[in-house]
Every structure is written in structure tokens, then in C-alpha cells.
Length: 335
Image (cartoon, rainbow, N blue to C red; front, top):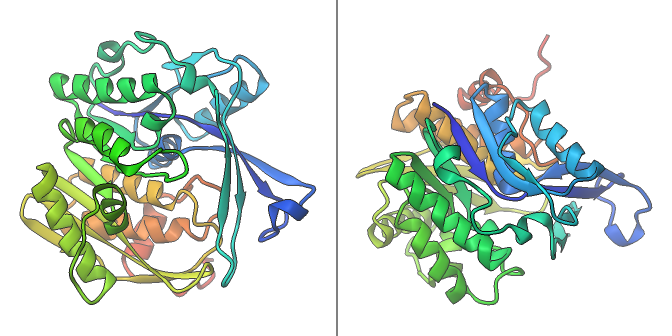
């Protein structure tokens, strides 16, 4: 039994000097990343059996992306090769009052050109335990939306649990109403929903009560459960002091059992891929049979720890995450 994730892996380019702006940088660090591939790599680092499903061009960049995934222990036999290009995105790491920013260059990328029937979902999902999907892949093309919905439906029919991260990228969708139509079809087959109060407000125009981010998130997760009928929901909480410092926590709702983690304050090195680290840790801890409180504590620890690591991938081990989970956040040198 194992995990499957489906989505796009892209070429990530970041100014070599940390914090430098894109328009004044002559050198960029190269990496490969994307929400679903980040979840796959984090699960691989945690010694899970995980496959990544995607489409990549037949060139050196496609080869390098596959090798990158394999380096994290991710199996790539279901990666289809074809199309003209790999999607690319540029990341500018913010600092203090200057926010981080992203420039996407992913039009006509290989995955957006997938064809009907190109992925044999019954074969792909055979003997798998979890399928992870996100709200990003469906917006890349009409067929990507159909494939994501089909993957979720097929998984549900085969008894494979579906985890759906309601990622919403405003710059990619024409409107939140378009996202609602696609998301609703995925949610019909979802067992575990990842998100936050902000995405429910952006996509479904929900409003939440409470005097703090935690109270609003608790209200959001309860309303999300009622609206979508999903059994399990795991939401992140981000108290955004600046681009350099955040206070982080999480909420896990399993049926009617609500668990909230302690908040962890972090100084940010790279905030990209942090929600993916949260999702991977949550899936890992659920699969390992952790208690509800342990699940959200472990997930939040991974969420926080990823903020200290450059790049999209979360490369911390289970023991390193557990150490943060247990309150070892002083940063003392380990000898």
C-alpha cells in the first residue's frame, strides 16, 4: 500500500543571492518543484512508498526533473514523457516589509497538453492507499481538470482515499466561480481536505467569526465540514507579522473531534512548499496511526520547520520533525 500524487513539477528559478530581486539578479539557483511533487518528495523523505504521476518533455530538463524526484525516493514509472516544455516559475524571496512574489511561465507546459486516456487510472491506483490532488492542476487546461476529477472519482470507486489540497491561485483562474465548479466535483470524492480560512473565503466567499486567526480557522474548518461533508479536514493557521517572521499553528477535525496545535514562531528562510510539508506530514502521521492531537502537532511541526529550509522540498526526517513537535525549538547546536 502506498501514496500517489498527481500534478505538475516545474523548473524553479530563484535569485542566487538570498533576498535579491528578480529584476536585478544575473544568477539564479535551479530547482524542480510543484505542490504535488513537493508532497511526494516529503513523503519519500519520510520513507513512504510514493509514486508521482505527471507529464514531462523528452529533453534534459524533463530528465533532470525525474532524477530530482527519484533522489527523494519517489517512484516515477507513471510519468508520461511528451509535450514541448517544462513549466517554469521564478520566485523572489521577500524580507521584512517586502513580500515574496512569484512569476509563472507555464503556458503550454507538457502537463497542460495531456490527452484523454493518457493516464490509466485503474492501473495507477491499484493497491494504493492514498491519492493526493491539489486545486492547481485543474486550472492548467480543460483536460487537466477532467483528469483530476476522473482520478478522484476512480480512486473513490476503488477504495483509495483521496486527499485534496484546495490550493487556489488567483492569477491562474478566471474567477472563483470557475474554481468552485471544478472543486465541488473533486470534493464529492474527497476523504481529507487541506486548506485554510483564506481559501474558503476566496473560493466560496465564506465569512468567519472570531477575534483571532485561530478562532476564525476553527469556525472555517467547521463550516467547511458542514458545506462539503468531508470526514477529515486539516487547516493551517498563519499569523503574518512580516515577510520575515510568522507564527504558525494548525487545526485537525476528524468527524467531530477537533484538535489544535500549539503555535510556533519562525524566522522565515523560504516559505514556499510549507503547506505541502504540512500535507505530507499529515498524510504520513494518519497512515502511521497517530492520535488526532499527534497528527496536528506533527503536521504543524513540519509546516514550521520547512520555513527554515531553502527550496520547495522539505528534507527533514521524522525524528527532526518530532523534535520540533516535542518543543525543541531553541535552535541549539546538535553535537
